[in-house]
Image 1 (cartoon, rainbow, N blue to C red):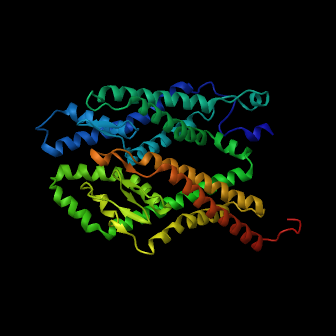
Image 2: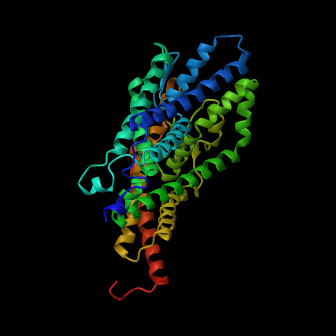
Image 3: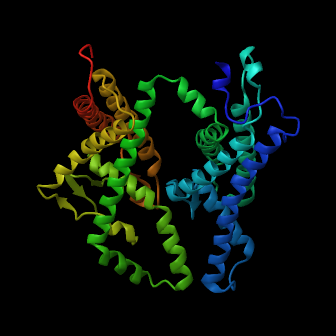
Length: 412
């Protein structure tokens, strides 16, 4: 029985294995260095494209690239004394993908480490994943701290503590999951979890992905409807080729922030684009906004059309569709389990989206632009209620359909 719970690759023959500490340390260092090198390279290219290297020095461009890498880790910075605390989630998402890839590979490399089947049966603990993740995280954090020290100045003042916390969060959560999956431990642990728990997690993932796709579509449609205004903004900035390319890259890295804002709008609480402003399905109250192309997706200030509040049904529908899709892959004929999967999965999806809303905004400039973003608490509550309700209905419908399609004993 114990052998069936042994992760793939676990064996007693491991004399030629490389040390876990070495593998995990190199993986963590490489994950950080890869994205850091990319940011430094883009900054150097942008510096040459902007003025052919006439003004400034390569060191300044490298410092800018380092600061960009740090902002993707929540450092924030000061520009002419103005705090910029908003996190470009596009960069953070890129970092998470790279961390996942390196952690997944690390998991495959350390799959054979740890106690063998006989040792496990004798009661030995398998600390392979925690040890690998701890070393992976430590190496990543070292790179982050060194980058903060070398790139930061008294004027820019990036928050090193925030960089450390974000680095730990990314490497422990994303990297930890990658190591667990790559080493085969995740499959073992999930097999030991109750089916209802696995079903709820699958429902949460399905609901959240469905809602993010709908939010992305809503944002793109809104931007397309006023695409001319976005192009007008670009033309009025009078950017040359080099500056234009860098500005487009800057725009792309905040698209995920815009998608989260779009989701907050669909949930009802909406978001702010400055102190005292609000963009929601019930009312739009905004003033003058900076010249930024993505802001062309904002609706006109004033009362909203009568059909717009109907968009509040979309999160509920996403919860329903996500639960249906999840239970289609993992069906159940038990009414209580079907309802529980959808309800708990929806609540978890609302919790995760609320956390995304909490990190999507911040200060982006002087004056009233110090407050940009959604009210995270309200988004969290609306998300739990909307997704939970939709998930509950979807779970019950899926269970009804499965019971209708399959022969069920009278006792059930």
